[in-house]
Image (cartoon, rainbow, N blue to C red; front, side, top):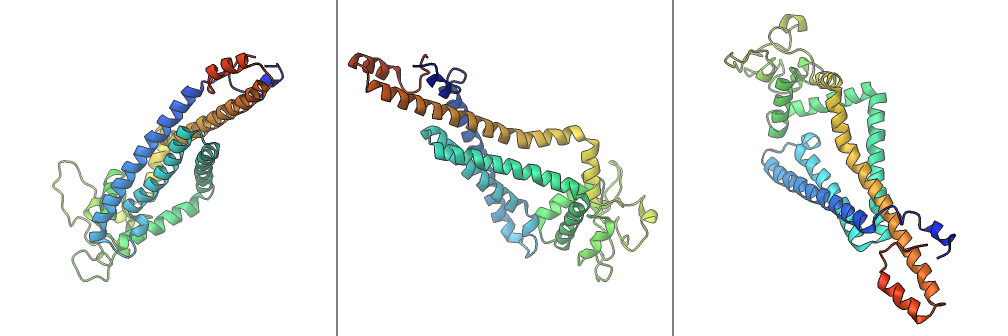
Length: 295
């Protein structure tokens, strides 16, 4: 092969075709199985949620989020598995571009959320209030909200007065929960016996007068402050989300380049065979299409 022709074989001597192929197959199959597992969990959770479903709770339902995430991961990873098994350039490029677009959207979304931080916080608060309205009807949201309020020592979205959005906690409600907050908003020691009515008649009082009884700060700010204080954990979560996608884009790019090199090399040698003797044809056939040929 002429020296000038070898320049077209960009990575022939640097990356093993079989190594790249095996790595991409394992990568795609791993996330394919993860996607199938997430989808199965989401479907099961949604079936259970239908028993207690309310009209306005779908947006905050973890089951819906799991189903959408599982479908995306399953389909995209399936494309990757099929493309890497068949060495299909079109599918490989589609897999790479989809991963790249997802990565780009996530990065842009994160930057936009930071730039428009106040609007993001308002958006979260509005949707938490929507969930609070159905607190006792949507068990998924109730469990999440209770966990967040106890774990992050907070109450409501913007503040504890958000609980007035719930029909049972509104000050105009007739029941015993009227003008109160759930017991998960209450401040207590681990040795104390939980009083489920500890939040009784708290909503209409001033924050400073109840700060020793309930948590007065909202959960949106509490969670954001926790992430800022634990930036290493946040960085780890971000890397855990973005790094695998970047690795998939890189593997796809290298593999596409490697397959294109093999195709170009095969066509070049096929043209040379037409001008050589039968002996050379036998030697070329024994070399195989996945080998790196000497210059």
